[in-house]
Image (cartoon, rainbow, N blue to C red; front, side):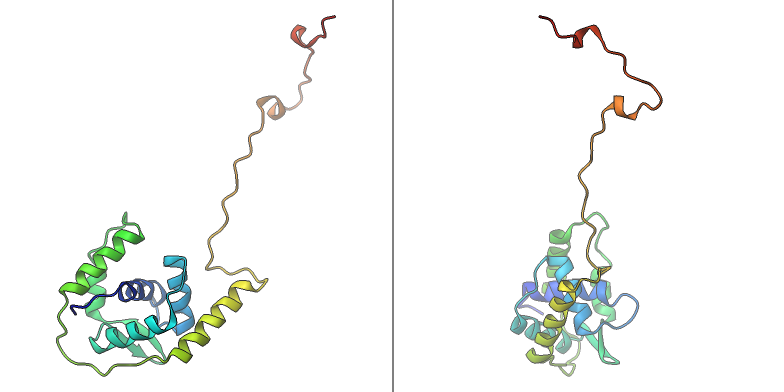
Length: 166
């Protein structure tokens, strides 16, 4: 697979998260893409990436959902736990550049309309007041409490330094 696009690597990485235990539907894939990248790629680019990766047999459609094939899972097996997203994307792109399609598979073309509906559902779910478990927790600022406030049961005696000098 010589012409490698960034969206292909993003799609493989997000499918590795979304379809970990069962085939993922399009809304789950869009959610994983948003979590991995912070943004969602353009719908036509995602549609083209689906067509390319299913034609090479790296993405397989099962029961209305999508999952990675054995070849794509082998690509991801070389990643390290300490790698950040940028390093992981570059490793996946290297593997995609070296990958040769063994057979020609029927391309499962995901329509732009289907992806657009999935993106709209994701955005509607992210706006809803119900707390989503897929979003990260906000980090709280550490609150500094003076030591004198932590001491319990002791009264502070006035010190000589605090007296007002005329």
